Image (tube, rainbow, N blue to C red; front, side):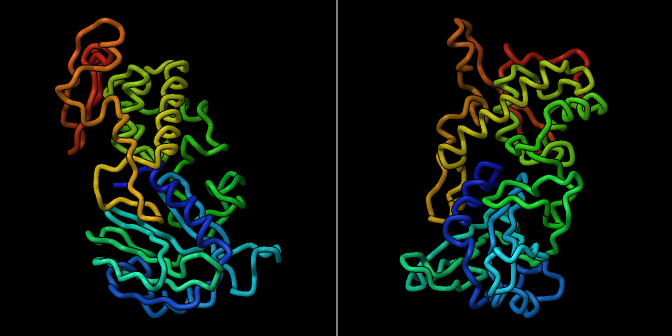
Length: 318
């Protein structure tokens, strides 16, 4: 499943190639991919056709395109009221393509965009496993008055479906101090807390393991025992691994994940923990120790750690 850096790569592509353009035509080729739009495919099409995409916005792994009337390029000062919400799910892709190119095998929704010289004319939603989807949703005010998320033109608005999630570590309005207080008020393991989108958004299994390894913390360390310095070290580790992944274009373990131009991510080549069971811990090797990474079951998935520099705490909370 795409994680925050992957979704941010897609957001940046949409901001470059789609923002500012009008949606001329909508084709729903598989109604299952607009099932979250409860009024149905025809209403979905009717709400989109003739509207203009103002921007591409992301909070955590949530992604949406604020919409305005087709004649409004955003300079009117009137705030947008709706957005096209994109759920990528396990295999969803948003591809900007030339109309002359053949349809992808699992093409579900096609948006034909207004002409722009030298720019592909279609935005295609492709989804093999059909866990993702598109929907037109209302925009609501953010609860703290800050921007809804990462955007070219930030506004204090957020897609209603994303309003319940916390800010992510790459958000300028994110507060590590506030996260520390939330951690201290919980009685749970630190990895469970990292994966709780209402505490901090955008961190999935891969980057949680990478950050915990970098911060030398076991995934079952109780959050209410974390010292401020440890929380800050963990936040720094999360930011570092995400920024490096973003620079590399994202992490791709699945050939289904691509960005808007069809290029796969490749940060998986630089991972230090995730997927490295049975291999030497690179940090221990640098420091003259011999330790082998292990894989352990965690919340119906896996956790990877070094048994030497991420020792199991006595009061572990699994």
